[in-house]
Amino acid sequence: MLFLVAALMLFGVVLGTVAHAPLTLTAVAAAVIAAWLGIFALRERNARRRTPSH
Image 1 (cartoon, rainbow, N blue to C red):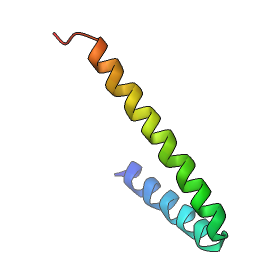
Image 2: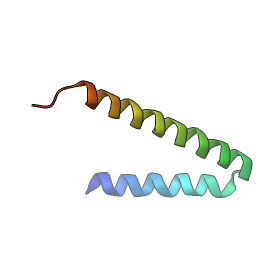
Image 3: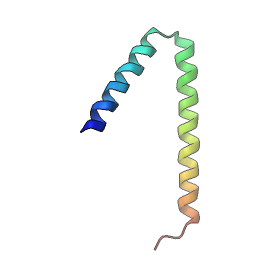
C-alpha cells in the first residue's frame, strides 16, 4: 500500500512538471522513454527465448 501511495505521489509530481514544460520538450522526453521501454522489452523477450524453461 505504501508503494502505491509513493507511486501516485511521484505520478502527480511528474504530471505537474509536464504541464509546465514546453510541448517539444515533453514530446522528446516521451520519445526517449518509449524507445527505452521498447529496447528493454526486446532484450527481455530475447533473454527469455535463449533461456530454456524448466
